Image (cartoon, rainbow, N blue to C red; front, side, top):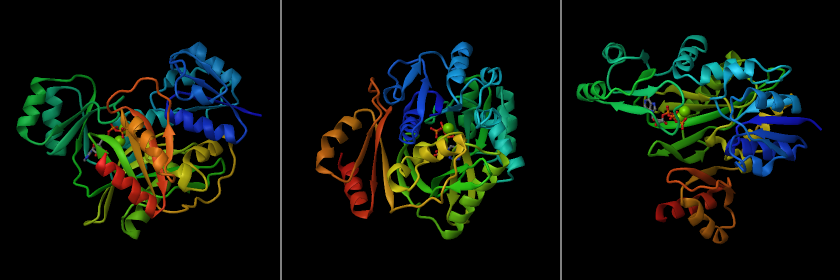
Length: 364
Ligand code: ATP
Ligand code: MG
Ligand code: MG
């Protein structure tokens, strides 16, 4: 059988590896942490940093296909590999690892709405950016941010002055703060032959800037639903996409508007529900796309809910689990428990189980 090499050994790599194994592939992961989540479920691990050229070349030599589970892979290192097959490509990383490049791509190439934005590298730039973009805004680091890290809310002129006096440094982006009514996401992939495949839209609730709950299908109008699917297909085509792309969006149900928030060049946390609730999970879809297999039409078996288990919630949910036979419990096997760290998740399918899980999380 063929071997799939995964760069990055977190929970996304783990769930990709589980799908690939079920499909009969061998899997090797490259990650600096021994016994990382992915290493626990795959055939072999190369223990090295993600940008270690020798280790990446070894992974490429031992694999038929390379994939990545996060956007901060070294683009230089990937470009320098000899005889490596990386169907997702490097351009996808160039765009999605940099919020400025990403927003410019969405606005100018895909011609899909995004928040107004401006590049900021100095306190003087910020004044100019505020003039262009307006307040309220959100200032973000251009690269490397996740779970809301490296973001500053700028609601008033006083907030702007405070930030200028306490300058974070680096390349930043000021984004207009969108007055949305809901946050949603959609997963999309594309086969080798260019066939586009989307999964049902998830409605997402965040707590402390971390994704907490997903409800599927999103309770939005038919019109918004089809706008979101069309946006996903447009973006996937413009990217010549291979592998799964996760798209986060804002919707305003009153004005019927949609904006793209950000792109993830890989399966996405809000698509975990697809493992139990769909005929083909986002992870199987990802593997199928990168190895060149066809992908059937996606079907949702029933409505679903996913809850992230952060910090010590995993242990609590594990204790409650025996009483709730319909909960699909996922433990990523991370060694260290930290507050806010994604340790696992729970998915339920069907209305009775959704009510049971909702009740549990209101009372926990
Ligand atoms: P992730 O873990 O999803 O990668 P991140 O650190 O990249 O998170 P964003 O998705 O950019 O962060 O922002 C986190 C959250 O902050 C969003 O889900 C949304 O709730 C809010 N937010 C971000 N940008 C905007 C915006 N321009 N307007 C309104 N709200 C925003
Ligand atoms: Mg992000
Ligand atoms: Mg986000």
